[in-house]
Image 1: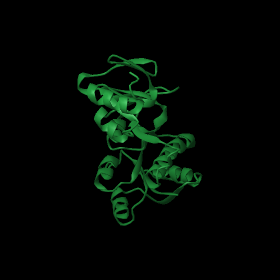
Image 2 (image 1 turned 90 degrees about the vertical axis):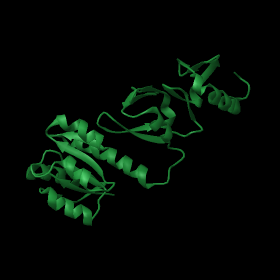
Image 3 (image 1 turned 30 degrees about the vertical axis):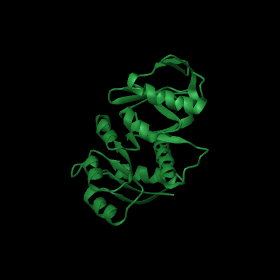
Image 4 (image 1 turned 45 degrees about the vertical axis):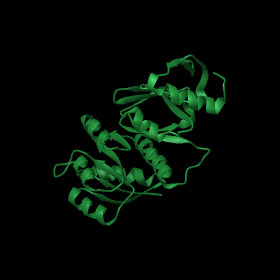
Length: 236
C-alpha cells in the first residue's frame, strides 16, 4: 500500500484527488493540504511514499516545495499549466498530469508510481528484468530483454525496443550503461551500446545487431573483441 498526501491551494482539486484515491485500492491518502507550509511540517514529521502536488500555488510553488523536503518521496505533479512540465521532469517526477484530468489519467499515473514503488522495495526478481527511465515527462518501465540496441545523441539516448517505439531520454550513454547488466551489454562505439544476445554477426569492425549495422569504434575495439571471444570463442 502506497501512503500519499495531496497538496493544492484549491479545495475542489483536493476533493477530486481524494475521491480518486478512494477508488484506487493500492493508495492510502493520509491527508490533504491547501497550505504548503502546513504540508511541509507534516512531511518532515511523517514521511510518505507519494505526493500529489500542484505546481502553481501562490505562497510556494510545488517545485520549490518538493526541492525543500529533502527526502526520497515520489511525486506526481498536478497543474493546469502544461508549460511547467519540463521543470517538473527535471525533478524526477513519476508523472505530470494536467487539470482537469479523468480518473483514467489519474490511475495511469498512480500505476506508474505503484510499479516504481515495487521496484524500489523488493528484492529483484531474476525473471523480471526491468529498467526505469524518465522520458516524455514521466517514468517509463522498460523490459531489459526487449532492448535491441541503444544510440547516444549528445545528452540524449535513444533506446530501441522490440515491437515498440524507441524511448528517447535525456541522459548520457555512460549514465545509462551503469544501470544495465554489465555481462549482457557492452559499449562498442562512442554512440552505441548493444546487448550480446542481439548480435547476429560480426564482420571486420561491423556488428549486425537486430537488423542494423553498428560500427565498432577504435577505442572500444579491444574490449569488445576480447569479451566477444570470451563468450563465443573464435567465431568471428
